[in-house]
Image 1 (cartoon, rainbow, N blue to C red):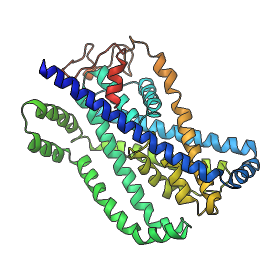
Image 2 (image 1 turned 90 degrees about the vertical axis):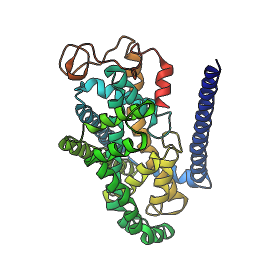
Image 3 (image 1 turned 60 degrees about the vertical axis):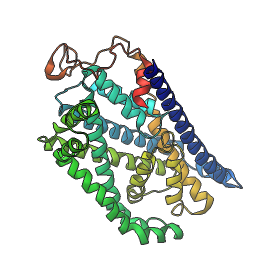
Image 4 (image 1 turned 120 degrees about the horizontal axis):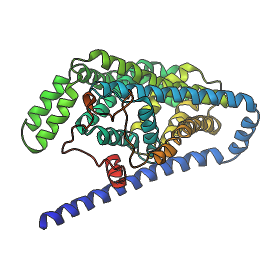
Length: 388
């Protein structure tokens, strides 16, 4: 009885901490957003922005924004390609329609959660629920995170030394010129570690075996996870394909801002977005805000404001450009809501080939284990717990 009460208290403490962290992240997003709105609306700034927008032909704006939607959608599709490739490494050949639908559902949930926790949490839950293979689902998401981190680090290392030629704000320009190369070297260290992990999973296996041992309790759960990661040891070509897909994911995110900037008539260059874009992605991945709201706009406003004329006007233009990028992503993510509602409680994930539920090696009944999730699809509490 005491153990039960202790467990209830522990779970209650966890829930309180989660709520506190969510409130703090909401406060950060709200605070940054209020600051940006204040800068945009003070004085004659709002009037100037209105004049700028009124000069943009509606047709030109629509064409550039359509381009932004297409680029963003292509980046999302490449994210699904990467996900599918990593699942193939575990022997799961899952249909495109299911993966695209699940990805959009995750994006929809992620609109209300910090960083990428909603997207990653839903996908982890979804694959584990249908395949009964939680360790594989976890390892796929983890390897995806490592590939994404590696690609993002490469982009930052390649572009940050040239940031001084793009940023016209004297204060920021001098700071970048002083610290750019040093920052590239520092970022190169975790980039090298990520590459080592991707190419040599044995290193991770030995690390966890030494840390937790091979038997009993938590050590056994870690072993299951590490064994799931081990499947990529002899699949370097598959990992390379996932890395290439990840490169296009981040590239599309950056290039999207080329379109949103030009939709506003700002004459933004590809060189500019390829420098600031990776920094913006890195900033929004830090789990200090809700879906990167506020952080995204602040990065573009701060780093691009000088090039757009400086002062409050340049700051406002950069923030608006960043917000349009957010709006494009959310416009696509909203499709996940109806898809989630359309998936009935008896929905089953299907293989790419017709007939039979998705199971490893094509079996019809699957291999359930102690890590199995409820298959009814009705347990929303488990979904929420998985995401958080």
